[in-house]
Image (cartoon, rainbow, N blue to C red; front, side, top):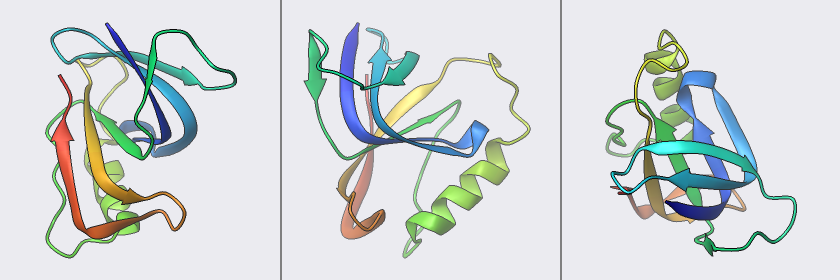
Length: 112
C-alpha cells in the first residue's frame, strides 16, 4: 500500500474536488480510500498537484479546460453507484494548482 499526499483530488462519481488529501493505493493500483491531510502522516509520499479517482479510464480531450473536464467526467460517472467496482487513480502532471487549470503539457498517468 502507498499513501500519496496531494493538493487536490477530483472524484467524478461524486462531482467533488477535495483539497489536501492522502490517497491510499494498493499494490495492484486500486484506490483503497482517501482522507483529509490535516497533519503530517508517517509513510506518506508528497506528490502535490492533482489526482483523479475514477471507476474507469480517464482521458483529457484535446484543448479541454479543467472545468470542462470535471463537468464531462462528473456527467459520465454520475450514474456509477458507490462500491460499483475498483477505483483507479490518475496523476495529472503538470497541473497548475493555483489557477486550477491544465497546462499545455498536462497528461494523465495511471498510478499502480
